[in-house]
Length: 521
Image (tube, rainbow, N blue to C red):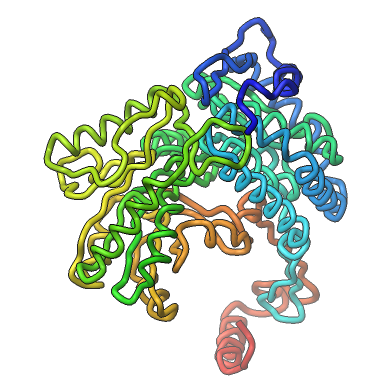
C-alpha cells in the first residue's frame, strides 16, 4: 500500500503545474488542500478579471492559425494525446486522488473517460464537420452547402468532483472543431486540468490554445462569460440558472449539466444479487460525489428483504482508505463543507424518524473528510435527504407495490439526469426507461454504460441541465452552422422578363408537381 506521504514525485510536479498559470500577480496564490489528509498540497496563482481578458486575447490569437489547420491534423493530436494519457496515467491518478480524495479505481474512470472521448472525436470529427450538400430550393439549379466553422473561444467552467474528466473532456471536441478554450477549473482542484493541458501541448496542440485561469467563480465567472463565444458549465442548478441568465444577456449559447436526485428502480423480475451489487456502484462511486450518482432506490415489496440484506451487507464490507493504490473501494469527501452537508442530511433524517441500516458516521480515524457508505429507510417529505441533492455516500430505500408506483415516484422530482432500471427482461427495462423523465437511463447498470457510450448524447431533463455532451451534439454545439447557396441560371424570385402574376402561376404549378415527387424534401 502506498500512503499519501510516500509520493515524492508529486510535489515538484505540482509546483511545475502551478508555474503554467499566467497571472499578472504570481504572488496572489491559493493554498490547495490534500483532500486525503486535510493538509496543504500545493499553491496555485489566482487569476483576476484582467488576467481572464488577457488569456482570452492570447487564446484567440492562437485559434486563428489552429482553425486553418486541416481537420485531420487536429484529430491526430487527439490520438497522440490518447496514447500519452495511458502512458502517463500514474502521474494524473496521484494528482486526482490528492486534490479530490477519491479512490484510485474511481480516478481511473476519469482517465478512461478522457481516452474514450479523445479517440471518439479523433475518428468522427471529419464525419460531423465536413461540408455537407443540402437540397436546394430549385433542385439542380440551386447548389447548397452546410459548413461548420468553429465558434471561436469556448468558455468551460468545471467542478471539483471529476477534475480531469470535467476539466478537459468537454474541451476535446471544441479543440478538434478548431476552437480555442478558456478553462476555469474549480479552485479546489486545478492541478488535473493544468496537467492535461500540458499533455495536449506535448501531443502537438499549439501552446496557448487552451488557457487555464484558476480563481474563484464569483470573481471570474462573469468575465469568462463576457469573453467567450459559447459556454460549457457543469455544476449546481442554482448556479446554472445565474450562468444561463448571463449567457442570455450576451446572446451566446450554452450547455449545462446540473444537479440530480437520481433514482434506481428494481423491478419485480430483477436478479436481486446483481441489482444489489450494481446499486453499490451506482450510489457510492466517488463517495457519491457524482452528478449521475443514485440517491433514491425503489424496491418492490416482494423483493425487499432479499435486496436490502444483500445491499446492506455489501455497503458494510466496503473498504475506505487514503492509499494511492487500488486497495480502497471508496475514498474521501472533498472538504469540510461537503462533510458537513452529508452529516446534516443524515442527522436530520434520523432526528425525524429515518432509520440507518448501514453507515451514518464520519470516519476521522481514516481521514478528516471520510464518511461511511450510508443506507437509510423511512426518509420522507420534509427531510433534507428526501428531495435535496446530498452529493455524498448516502442513499435512501423505498418499498413500492408496483412498477407504476416506482415510475411515478422516480419522476416526482424537479431533476432528471440519470436513472437506473434493473430487470431480467431487457425489453421490459427499455419500456420502463422510456417512461422515466431523465436524460440518460441505464438498464442493468448504474451510470457508466450511458456515460461511457460517447456516441450517444448525455445530459439532463428538467432542472438537470441544458444541451448535451457526447456524440454529434458534443461537437456540433461548438460550431456555427453556415449555409452557402449558389444559384445557377434562374433567380429565386420573379425574373426580369416575366410578369409577377405569371411567375406566381408557374410556381404554383411547380409546387403541386413537387408535392408528388418521391424523394424531394
